[in-house]
Amino acid sequence: MAVAKLGYKPKSPTREYVESIGVAVLVALLLRAFVVEPFKIPTGSMIPTLLIGDHIFVSKFTYGLRVPFTEIFMVEFAKPARGEVVVFTFPVKEARAHVKNTPREQACIDEGSLREPKDFIKRIIGLPGDVIEIREGQLYLNQNPLPRTLESRTPTGSFMAPVLTQERETSGEYTYTIQYRRPHEDFGPVKVNEGHFFVMGDHRDDSSDSRCWGQVPMENIKGRALFIWLSLSDQEGEFIRWSRFGSTIH
Image 1 (cartoon, rainbow, N blue to C red):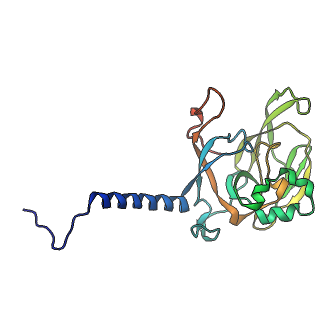
Image 2 (cartoon, helix red, strand yellow):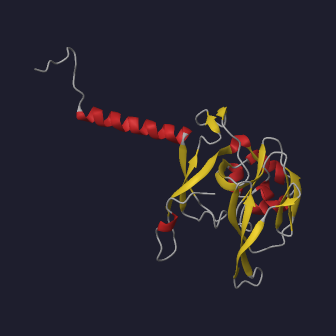
């Protein structure tokens, strides 16, 4: 025979429902703050690695644990490595200083990002102390060319940039595909500052990155891109890109 506890009052279904929702929200907030965060790819700067409409998860704990909703690390586990794809808060202070006396470079900077910081996603090219240079389109790291192999050359039909070139480039432990139409770019040399990183997009002609606005401080880096969990297309006849589901990002 069951005996009711003195003073015990059963919870109403409404209260149990509200408490369950509250616990679920709390768990979701903790996961977002410390473990993973979803991110949508809004531009083509990382094509062909990431496409517009890709939805990805970003690891928040690869490099350490932060005080929630701040850029302060409580514990650091690792530093970003060459070739890793990272999400970071746009470095407004560094960008303003970088373009202060060079107005022509404003063309590759999103003016909205200078007013209100946004999240960017790029690939780590240079670590603190590295020297970055581009000669005739070839990327040099500490005076050594990054290894490249030709993947494809596709006619574009454009007089100004008649060929789209895709190449496999290796940086650190990662090999990935880059693409460009203008092969004769020159840049630098520049030395990466202590506590900063030099980042670039894989779509080299269509990326606002460290070539335009400077380097990214460690405290701005939110996490490392993990994998694609959803990919939506706005092209006619293609809504969901099923083949991209679950693809790891490297």
